[in-house]
Image 1 (cartoon, one colour):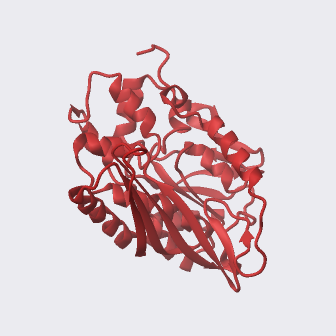
Image 2: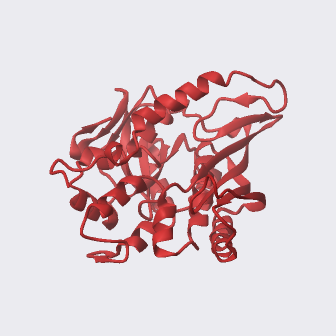
Length: 332
């Protein structure tokens, strides 16, 4: 292993190149429906004009976490991840997810695999309070090796209740909600670390069995956030996924986000950072590092919201645009 340590890019995922690719795709998508069904500007999830309300649609998968599941032959939790990655994006705009469809592509039919995937999907639906209203399966032996799972979540929000970051101002407090672990992002780097180490997924480190730590299902924040929205004025939210703290820029890019008292770091991240000799900068722009979701509110209610959400105030908004992680002197 290189003494300078691994990076996400060297492991096979170039975040900047992905952003360039997304921009190139988006520039070609210029058709716009008018009236009911017209697109509205949104972050984290798509917004659709539907009269007095906006519907939301977002889609995502589980990524290379599936390879860890394959290695352990344990597929009963990745359905939770599939739903989580979608519904956690949905709620960022203040929308409540209500329905979900899944897509499963397999190399060859496998009833046991499908049964195990179904267990996770059902549990994820329960945690997110959504109905799985349909889905699609495909046997694609010439394309897919193993299997892949993705899904799409439908949600809704009254237009006057859309959270778009426009109320944000300097001095507002950033509240972090704890993650359960890696969630479903950064697994390409995490897997590369294990591959180049003396460990495998079935080995035990100081914190537990490595593969089981990596498969810990993504936390679903729907119910707690929906409760908060009924009681407090939430100004902004972000799902901390791929890109780590960079996700905060999506709330409102013209403001600055200063993290001065971060969430406790999950043990799995400590293990991966040490084993891969990864810099703090790389860790915080790849993984959630213990903070899976962010809520921004005014200073006056921050402590109350943090207590009710079982999170903590981790920082505040500042005038200078960007994301700043003070303890590690990191600037994104």
